[in-house]
Every structure is written in structure tokens, then in C-alpha cells.
Length: 216
Image 1 (cartoon, rainbow, N blue to C red):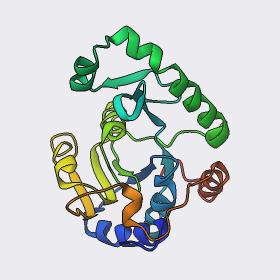
Image 2 (image 1 turned 180 degrees about the vertical axis):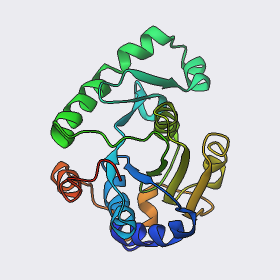
Image 3 (image 1 turned 90 degrees about the vertical axis):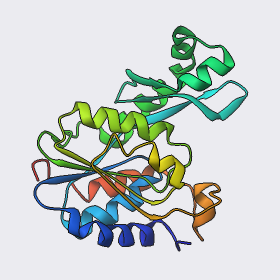
Image 4 (image 1 turned 90 degrees about the horizontal axis):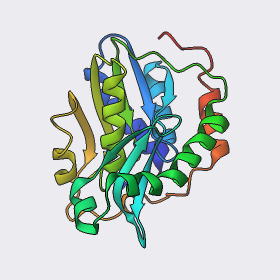
């Protein structure tokens, strides 16, 4: 069990050390992944950026992901076909369900990033960081987006996840670094002593600590 996201990030940064050789970028999934990713970026002197991604839940069972959208406008959508078939929703219906999530992505982009220039990924190692992975719906969308942006290598780095869920990502990334794979796996927050919600101001403050590193 981790004390908090900061400690988890420090431990994750140490584990990543032997894998880093050449230019790299740390990419956090907000909001919970930002404090973890900040420690990784600080330890290794790397730029920090965000992957804006949101889950689209099944109506009435919002924790069950039918899709995930990614990008500043949520234009790229990855559908969980098994869930879509089970609940009988087609692509058009899922697209309509995604509208509130797209609105939230637009809000976050304006609030967190403003006019900030995205860190270029072409030819670099992209280190995707979150505070843990439960179902993996949003992570699938994040990985596809980063691959499409030309990253030379993708490292998925999280403090805690289910081993079964991690297996889903092995074909899509070059390396996986996960500190703990407890069984049975419960909610991500169950593996932290302190797991408060990360507020918008904390995300903005973390990004402000990395103002001028776009080409690292």
C-alpha cells in the first residue's frame, strides 16, 4: 500500500531509471495521474504533458465503460465492442452518449492547457502515467492516441493494476512498469492510505512547474 500519490510517483520514477535512454516525455492522465507523473518528470528532468481522455459509461451503470474518448475535443473514440453488444447500443448512440464527456474534455483543455504548446512526441519515448488501472478503458484510448502522434517507444507506468488488465496492453506498448499487481484487485484507491480527489488547481500547479521544456 502506498502512502499517497507522491510516494507512488517517487517509487515509480526509481523503477523507470534503467529504461530511459534518450529523449522522453512524461504524459499524465488527469486528474489522478498528475501527482504521480510529476514525481517521475522531476526525478528525470523530463517535460510533463497531459493526455486528455474520458470514459463513456453505460446509462444507469456509469462505472461500466462502453467507450473512451481522447484528445482536446474528444474526436477519437475507442468503443468496447463487448459492452456495446451486450447493451445493444450502436456507434451513433454511443457517440451521443459521449457528448457530456467531450464537453468535459473541452473544459479541461481550456483550464489546464490554455495556449500551452503540446510537447512534441515524434521520435521520443512516451511515458504514460496514471495512479492505477482498474478496467483500462481510458488507457486503451490514450495509448492509441500517443502511438498516432509518432512516439518511437511507449512505456506504460503505473503504481498499481490488475495483472489481467495489464496483459491487455502488452501488444500495444513497448514496456510496462507496474509496482504492484495485487490479487484480488479492488478499486485503485484501496491501495493508497491517502487518496483524495485531485483538484483542478493541483493539475494547473503541476503543469506550471514545467513551463519551458517543449523540446526536451
